[in-house]
Amino acid sequence: MATLAALADRHTDLSEDDLERIRGLLAEWSLLADLAMADLVLWLPVWHGGGFVAGAQVRAATAATRVADDLVGTVAMLGARPDLERALAGAHGPVCLAAVTAVPVMREGRPIAVLSVHHDEHASRAGRLEQVYRETAEILLTMVADGSFPPPSTETPVAAPPRVGDGLIVCDAAGLVRFASPNAVSACRRLGWGTALLGQPFAQRLGALIHRPGPVDESLLLIAGGRVSGTTEVASANATLTVRSVPLGGQTRTGALLLLRDVTELRRSERALLGKDATIREIHHRVKNNLHAVAALLRLQQRRVGDPAAAAALAEAGRRVATIAVVHETLAVQPGLAVDFDGVLRRLIGLVVGGLDGGGLDGGGLDGEPAITVSGHIGTLDSAVATPLALVVCELLENAVRHGRPTAHPVAVTVSRTERSLRVAVRDYGPGLPPAGERTGQPTLGLLIVESLVSSDLRGSVTIGPAAGAGVVAEVTVPLGGEGDG
View (cartoon, rainbow, N blue to C red):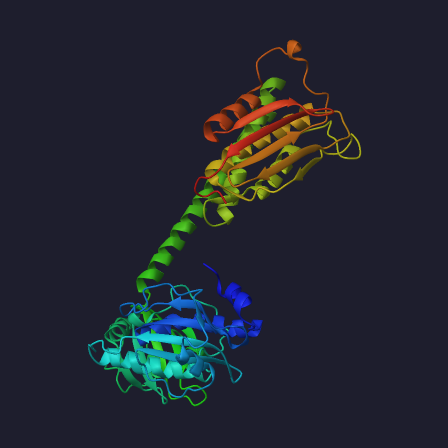
């Protein structure tokens, strides 16, 4: 389906400022549809007065649909819709809903589009609530026709804003409640409102229900009083409400429409999730501390062992424990189960470089620390992938630095990622592998760990072979697609 911008570009000469005004209306027109209990279709004038093209459409959540077909992209040639032509010519006044009502969309005193309101004028009215819906819709549509709705607003959109059915209050110009829907009354009761709403100054009474030390937030009083357009949240000991205000009447304010939604359970669930997230991070923090303690104990034992082979084995075990701790340390400081593996990789490089003693190299010679360069980007990974992958990369890095010397070239790590897989290649520029016929003995423990983790935990593949020119390249490929892979 074509977008509003594409249809406007193809059929109209509307400017970007005109489209921005229309987008502002579309962001609010679900409110119009629900109050009018009608379907709305936005019509854009075609080049040189050749007719109209339907740019957008919305249906009400408070009534049965009146326009079953999707009209977006439909063109009404000149003469086919005289009601739209009259509205575009400026023939409008106070809006009175009929079967189909055409309302001009104004910007800076000129019509730039037409809104057609498809309303069931013969539908039975269930009572005062539907009557208030219709009266308020007529006021707002008249404001559309004079360019004052929606009012300019710099507020940040809130998640799950209140809808008409959640609770509706209409106040007069003095801020006194003129009408309150049953849902609005129930929401205020849960907040702690103990008296009747009708005739009460809503903003002042609402401010008195907030049991907070210090003065009441001025913006809350302005929004709850209907003086400015906006959304705020009000909380008492018993409940939490989201309150949205829409001033009525344009330049001469005649009252305000207030929408209320009880978000008590939603906020309680959010707090529970935050508590669980904090608990999970604390667990990762403690696991990290325990792993560091184990690594420190292994280092102490290493210093007390006289056998060089045993000391080397303890050193490698300590480094592997510290590698796992790096992942848990990352999870301890960021929410969720996704791990920034690029940050983990930087930590692993520091771990490998700091764990090797003597004989290192850098890009300029053989006397500095081992140099490791990284190219490419992986992003976030699920912790179930990040932990074994960190161990694999750490083993390959140590092998490359330890066995790829002496050389003036740094060890090169190349990482890449697609939607379905990631690849990590570690290359050194050392003497390379001996010919196949001269290789003796079993693979080292490090390579056995790599092959086991890649095949069983990561369900990927690893290849180790001679690199083009000189040295050895080890390449690990891991399939992606599981939940949590960022």
